[in-house]
Length: 202
Length: 438
Image (cartoon, rainbow over the protein chains, first blue to last red):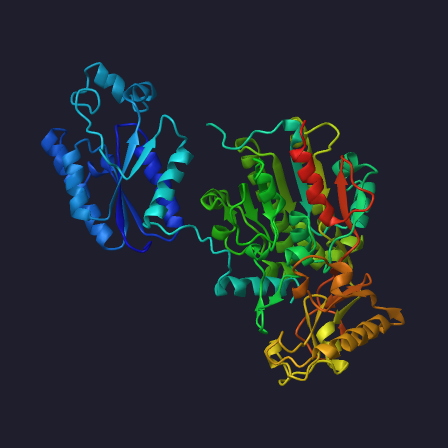
């Protein structure tokens, strides 16, 4: 189960915590021996989708491109983690159909909290009319209707959200649990044997 | 965030500072000599000498501490054991414990524990709180609960133990790494102390045991070239102890130190002679091998009557217990008496080697007594008993200079301790303190 690839798709408003959570989950899955690649919306726009703007059409193209790369990675045993606002439901569902092994994580945070947080200073500019077509301010964000995982970053700590995501992936069978067999493997036993010899016990 | 754990009154907290293998006698001396001034200031004249369970090795002692029971109940008789009905040696894991730990029991009452570098808890499993396993943990990924904490530890460069093979050969490596692992443990403690909710906090220093296995002669001999390095390490441990004690009190741990416990899991003393039980059993005609250099008890002759597992456990080669076992039930009693008599009569340079040879029912109680060895040896200080797979002379020496002993562990707590106590008494004292209404 855990050796098969899948796509973990983080969607949510700008500043909601998608990238932070994606990076945390990435590390945990790597620690569990999985191959992981992150496709961050902001980064993708500087290469794969360079030149695309923020019209609905361009946004859809960008999300479809990310989805296509996720599809390729997932079918080759890699966990593809996408972190992009991806505001339109239809395109997210398009990717879901294409990829199949697709887990949607809705990183939810109310707009008033985000406006206060405003880490990148974007909301202030959007509200002042300096940026046009800003998702959540003057451009729509279509909430997922049935995301596999919902995290609410105004109510949960980062750690709690990460745990919720990882635990959900375990329950869905996408990620192997941390080994809880309680037994030592043959390889471990050999190392233990050596240590006990070193200290003169055996 | 809303705490899942019931927050305890701070004066009901408990902090345990374990110093693996630290002998009462040596600690007293180092306190008096001014090498461990914080220990002297904290422990004063209330330092107690403590007995542990047999055999006096960390795997057994710490299991006895954490469960509050003896091996007849918790089922751990050593670092190794036989697979049932086989000669195959297995290494009991944390999951092999046959009874609950105090952390589990405390957790049922909403009390949260943080436990760092606890020997004999590998692979780590869920406890109500945080657990970082100590010796014999070999893989950090499996030594940590909750598992995802492993990443943080790796980022911090936390190391479970030093390379024991290298430590035996290179004293400079040993001293350097002892200091480094101690620093790592303190760093981790600092990370968890304030950031996590806890009622019970335990940290175990295991470097003392490593040092004493390889350098006990240097510890004891002021003219030894490594003596000052040894003292330097004890000074570092002393500083760490003092800082943990101060933290505990500044966090409202109670000015009388009643919630603070310091202990070791066994004593240590200098080796005069090593004694190889299997070689002795061969000499006594009780054990023979089909090969000249046996590597496993599978090579034991079916006619063998007894064999020894580390360090002091003698098992009769019973029919039914071992695949080629030949000792019948009616023969067992006579054999036990014979081996006991021979062991107690054993002399080296005119001195007795053993101070006691025990049957399970004399030292153990509980439902796991059926898997106990048939006899457990207790050597006199200076005679280091080894269960090595070995033939040839029964006495000898190797590069080791220090050995464990049974009745020279130490305990300190500002609270009350019953008149008769040993390492199994502590869990109930701690649990009572943490769960008492107040």
